[in-house]
Length: 492
Length: 124
Image (cartoon, rainbow over all chains, first blue to last red; front, side, top):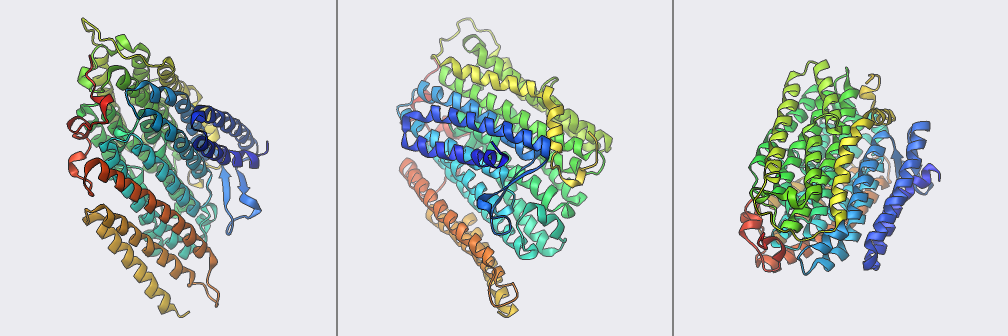
């Protein structure tokens, strides 16, 4: 398999599987697992090629930029593809059990549409990470949004439908802001190719307006404070596997584009003021999201607000990585944290799904004794919490440690304090759940039985989130391939 | 094409975008909001077309045209999805607006629907 084939398969195999899953309703799980195998093989091949020969580019149909579409794989794209494949595989294993174990008469109907939509979502994510120009990023971003909104609506309840439509409005308006920005950039630079923009971009009023429009749209889609209002209802009302996909992957698609824009295409416009502004919004997200998470009565809402908070950490990457000293440390730290959060958050939402099906509710105050009935799930939640809080040796710790190191080296004390406060708050809301879960009760309730695979999948992801900490050095090496010039020279 | 011409189109596109966005924010009726999104989209497309006329020479730049075509396809799909969802919201709530009462915390405990048997089942 050549790199070109690997890149093509990464997009075509989930797309073909999505179409087939729609045509053959009973085969969803098999098709998804088959996709996971093909995508996994393609990622292994592509990783080898990237580590050996640097950035890999594929010109679709032999037409290169500017008229054709280029697909490009570098270290960052590969990391995102890997995280997506990991979560995708877990969801492929989990979802069938989830849809078949609940007390929902319409579950077969939901499962029938879940598989094609899930595979479309996977297609859109892979295409987004491989896109090499800002217009193709717009198209993939829209595909991603459509799949995500429809998946939220899949729950079929009144609250879910309302949340889905609100999400769609935010998503479409945000995309149009982004698209208007793309138009202005093209008008100014006569190209949309990420790599050639850096050379052609000259700071001026038009470009500032364009970038402000694009960034505003993407911030709304990434649910960065104060544009996070649509996220908790959408994520909490969706079926558990969908909530996991949305929190772990979908919001990160927009974050990924922001990284590409500011660090790769327009580093000339990345002034300290811009970097600090991102950091400030991230800080507000950490504090606001954590406090809200502490106040939520339901487990899924708590996890959703925790996503708002953890996304804040990702944006701390901007002020820390933009500095010339130790920038790469923060860059790799932030991205390792992204992987850690994706795995931990998926594990948490899957656990919440298990509790919902076994106990019939997800009210935190009534979770007493849940360890008795769902020991594996409770353990998975604890482990995922460990990584989210950032205790060693988890990957959450590795990510935060690198961010902290970078902040200390640069003397940016505000961010040091903030990372620590955020961790304490995360510990508080994780403990709030665990303290109920581990309370002994005199007469434990008998839960509804759920398939063991649902518990084990959640545990596997939680273990992955902890275990990835040991691979952080390798991840940093991978990220070095094609890393933005802004922090090219700095050694980790 | 003289320079003033395409600037007029640029301004018109920007105006449409702003009008659409304003309506999206202030209108409550779902159909109006969906139309507002379409007006915003048309504004963006107009800006792209006007920018295509910017290139020197008699032939406009084809790249923005191709982008607008793609954008129109996306916009038609988006409108279809939004209309379908709005229809489902109408069927579920009997209203063609998004109420504030169904926000985050209040939602699922306060307003159980008949089909939502799973979540409201007693824990016993």
